[in-house]
Length: 353
Image 1 (cartoon, rainbow, N blue to C red):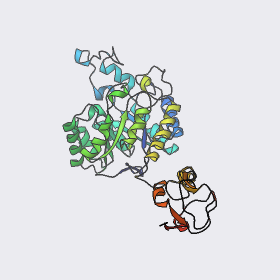
Image 2: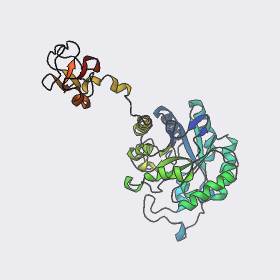
Image 3: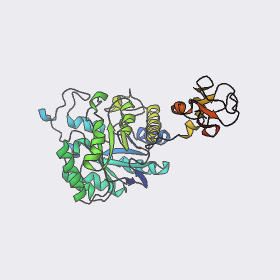
Image 4: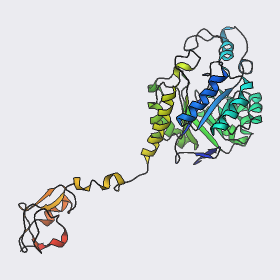
């Protein structure tokens, strides 16, 4: 299995803190100043990267009113695909300013390209990685084009089944991708937490032998935090200036304080995983006195037997373990033992005849 990938020098894998991708998506709501502000917020929150989406309405769909192009139900009901993407896209002329802003902040920035021309634009800006969006996971030509850049590639699996995920992975590797991650994703906006099936994350890690993460479309952080325990090394989540902003993606995106909490809490969850350990931790070492052990509860003279009357299992835990009480009873004290003294083998000898 691939243990890690690297983006902008940052190692990403289960042995490293979670890599948090703050997804700008359409949450600039058509204003460059909003997009620039979102980058500042992502940096302040502690995100590792921000991600754009690089398309235009004309590169992703057709300006067509036929039924196939109408959106019926859900968050974007009443739009055509073209009108939705015309509203949601990030203008290509903004990309340079956004990349320069991210660089000035010391923040990694990359994007989801939706066709070859988008990859050309992003290559001209020296994008450090590419993300294939969930609905594009079956677009093997697009995956191959992104993979041929030799940049790290993240594929969101979304609605893809096992065979389609495997095909996407093979297409990427055959085209030259050597650093690949896949994200478990449910392509609902928003998605109820009970539909996320996070056990899939662990299965994907074993089945596909890739770095695995989560693209989270729930409206809270619990799902993302829990995914860390299942082995997720990446968390991607939409964020916005204001969930009530009225944009296409605002309603299922995190607000600034929530993004900060996501960055903090996923890292804390990862730290809590630690390693397999059955020895005392640093936090426990000062609490030995709260365990039970064998103590003299009365003065015992040299030559006297140890009995249930003068030895008991009590706190603190500096004497012999309570399991040794049957072995200690009726042995002989080799010296005077003062009340409140922890019992140890040096104080006793063979049982009395």
